[in-house]
Image (cartoon, rainbow over the protein chains, first blue to last red):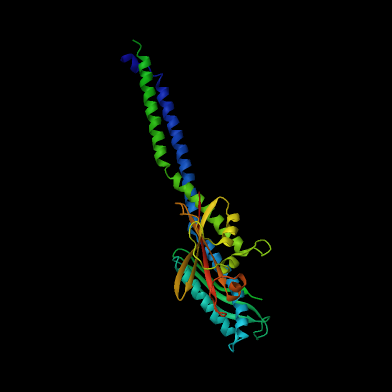
Length: 153
Length: 170
């Protein structure tokens, strides 16, 4: 037994085991960091409501054109003015959007601010811009565009 | 008796135990790999399905047979049943845009102040990692009439319809 204690040559085996273990631990720590970074970036992409906000904007723009055309169509068979009909239709659109977004736990508000006309009259070629306030809130992300200027000519 | 070899054996055993414990610790600490992979797939899936609805909505009429508004306007208001009845026009368009994916589509809209959700395409039960994309279209009586759809709208009425697509990989 005494001779075993004196022979220290094989200590290298244990030492190299320790070194290899430390290297593996270091590499594992790096790999884990990369994995956690990937997890957080993927999670951030899924959490942020980019598409919902973009869709709210682009659909409001598309609908403004539809509302303008429909306003003139209604005006041809009624005594109501174009701005009045436009406002009624836009309110209706806004109410439906609020309800449809609320189903997903999101609060939106799309309200008409003003209708801009090139010469003060409301002919089909005179209305060029409308000003709309758009807000979006899902509890984490709050988006405001006041006013959103929409070209409808 | 040569005691030297015994010491080598003992120290080799100690090194082996050390390395085994290290590998065990690493295996335990990298369990987070699984959700990371599934989240990355979800991101890609959500992007693809959102793009498919976007392309169908925005594409010029020369590029697609029917755009999203026309597909929705042309719906005959018959709810889908698996596997026979579905909205053929919309299904044909989406099938080409989403190769290798399965999807269900619902239409959600407000009728008499209440939310109505109707199934228009059913391709099966969504998987665990399914994602939901949505797009909105606005219908008027004119567009419905043009596409010979089953919606009942007044001449002065607007109907906002949410196209809700649940997509998953098989």
